Length: 225
Ligand code: ADP
Ligand code: AMP
Image (cartoon, rainbow, N blue to C red; front, side, top):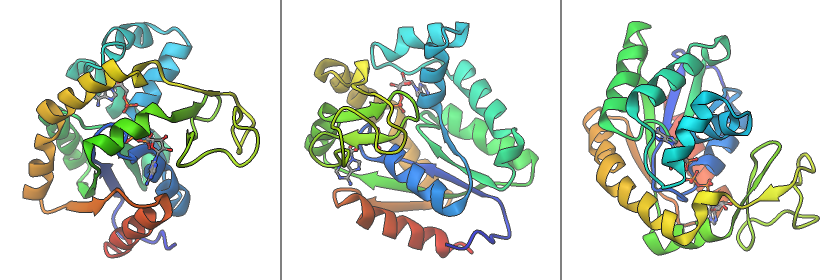
């Protein structure tokens, strides 16, 4: 896929927890050669390393609540200021509040940049609950699997790509998932209207096989060139 875009490509993946944002973001980044910036992955990496940020974030993540805006915004803006994001990035899990979206816009505007595309992966609540129930993540490279819908080709307990151990996220238990969905509808779903108003929203039916969803996303990105 062409990566010769005139303007850096900042893409924001929208959708409920379990809609497939991380799965699709990773594939899109491989095709575009730009980094995936996942706020959830950065928090989990910090937690693994027992940093003060990770320990703070854990208090919220364990309950399925959002980490406070100031902490999250600083962390993601630091990441986007790294040289590897110069040609753009696919953001996954950020922004999740209107304040985060406004902070992202302001930081990009300072560099004469903007969010170019905000695909929203539309998936029913029933489907996301099933997806989160069977989600497994590689402890080493964060690759995403599903026990039924996207299992590893080889050993069911190991990552195909790096051989790392697959684990179930603590916040994928049914009770925390219910709260995450509630938080999504209350705090994050209003961003769909925000990006619509900015003329960058792209609704995508996320209830189709991974490759079919990815093809739609690549077509939407190609249309920006
Ligand atoms: P999010 O980042 O939006 O929380 P993930 O990308 O982690 O969602 O996907 C959640 C789960 O659903 C994972 O186990 C993943 O393998 C699976 N999944 C993702 N996309 C699809 C799809 N199109 N069809 C079926 N399962 C999917
Ligand atoms: P995710 O990996 O995107 O499902 O995020 C896992 C958890 O990390 C969320 O339930 C929140 O507790 C926290 N988190 C991730 N991204 C954000 C964000 N943009 N704002 C606030 N909290 C976040």
